[in-house]
Length: 424
Image (cartoon, rainbow, N blue to C red; front, side):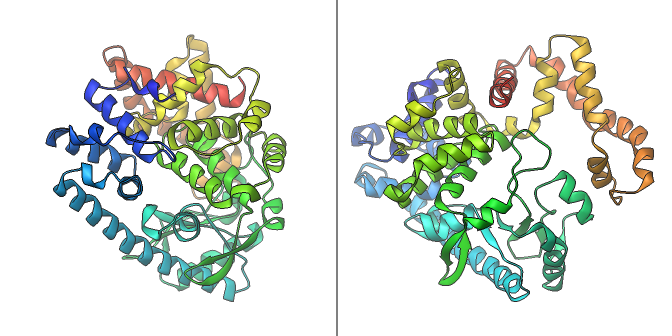
């Protein structure tokens, strides 16, 4: 399926994306001649793409692992080596800072499960420097959220914005990020999904299945291998519509390789179905298999395959992964739905849904207790805020969409992926 990169980007970028995928893909042989013929300008673009996809260190590792380090210019090798070293030092520092928080929470009798990046870097990848991370996500029981916030505040962290815990529980999966100068940002989760959406889950089962893990020689717990893999798949599909590039596929491939035959694929299928995650998990696993060489059992994919999956959906997802990243932040999901709607009435309905959000969401947005009567007084203000915040962007995108084929294609893809994932 890697041929989907052809025709999506400029010819030289398309070629470089294909080479990048081949370098990253587990078990994929790469002809050294593909690399030795690249011009300095192409190498510059190649490194830029790898950085955008946040796989620079992993590229260096794979080049050495595949014996391709002799096929690249010395200055490129030096750049990749230095980037890998810098990331190693950065992740070690972030992990140590995160561990101080985990220990503080545990000392206060707050069970804590590290999520995603810190576990990937410290326990899944071959070396700690192969996985980039921006922040540290920690899962705590919902009844411990307020206490966890107190612990972080006592350690000198400050929330990125004010909040009420009772509002967060009804509207979001985590507290605002806790920030401390010179330290990693900490996100305290009570769940791995937001509440009241079609793929929401009850987090209690995650705790029941948690398993031991070590972070910098400290004994803690992580999600079970099956839940950890499912979380990665859900995160890249439902929560981000495959806007995070190639790194999630590489993560999925590494997790499958790390746990190997101990992964219970029947359990993975059953839990995905119970949680209404089947579509997103299937897409994430297929893409990881194609782009990163994830060793997903073929018979599992055949049995797990949704009946209405098509090559069009798969190619759309593959294209989205390689899309210019500035699009991903400029066009939110509801914007894509609004812009692809074919009737004025549907557009009005979508707009009004953005105004008349659930009471708990309004309370969170305007820093009110969830049970405050003042919440109802915020809806007129919400109407004005939506117009001021998004009206200009909507008009700009609408005006330029027809003259910008890349933007138009991105919006159409985002809407298609969102609709297919939800079963619409």
